[in-house]
Length: 180
Ligand SMILES: CC(C)(COP(=O)(O)OP(=O)(O)OC[C@H]1O[C@@H](n2cnc3c(N)ncnc32)[C@H](O)[C@@H]1OP(=O)(O)O)[C@@H](O)C(=O)NCCC(=O)NCCS
Image 1 (cartoon, protein in one colour):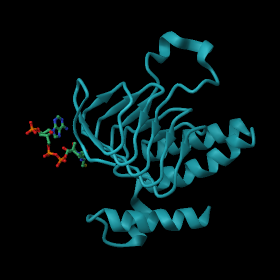
Image 2: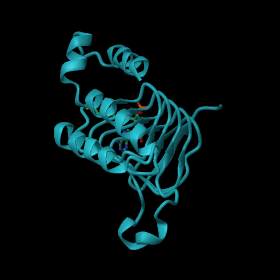
Image 3: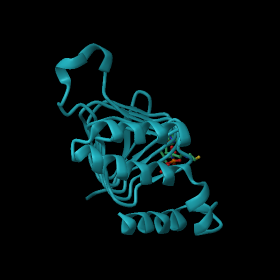
Image 4: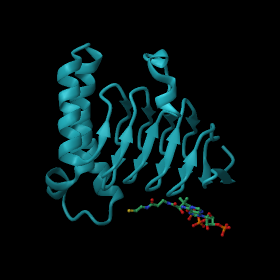
């Protein structure tokens, strides 16, 4: 776990030109705090120690403004910049090196209507490696966002997106795709 946290500090240092020291990142970056707490909550969740896991997730949300369900699988070096208002649902998977800005929702579609019948089913997105998700974007449902995609600020994405696409919206549309 320590190695992952050090990797994340280095990743933030390399990514964010506004950072002036690694100590600042450790002390004052809510996205860093949220992911450190999530890594602890997720380990407890995997061991079926669910109430303490939820308590840590709750504390993380109050403390950072970032709500990550303890069941969500978050890859290495995922940087949540600013963080406030980010929501990541239970069955989400976020690939290594993703960059997520404030206000992003990685959630289920029409969760209120599906109810308990979808409990324990995959209902949240799988985000590929190195994906950038702009501020306020919503990615909803059990869909795949391919490696290297860029999701524009404010986009609402409801369908699979092939790797290396740039997607803007709403309605979300792919405006460019690099060949793989
Ligand atoms: C999607 C994004 C990655 C594209 O960046 P880019 O590759 O440099 O592309 P461009 O800026 O050249 O824009 C390409 C086209 O998409 C459009 N576009 C870009 N961002 C858009 C957005 N958020 N919503 C709708 N359309 C958008 C542009 O108007 C342009 O359209 P055109 O070809 O008709 O002129 C970028 O615009 C973006 O949204 N980044 C997220 C940034 C962010 O959230 N920052 C928060 C910092 S706190």
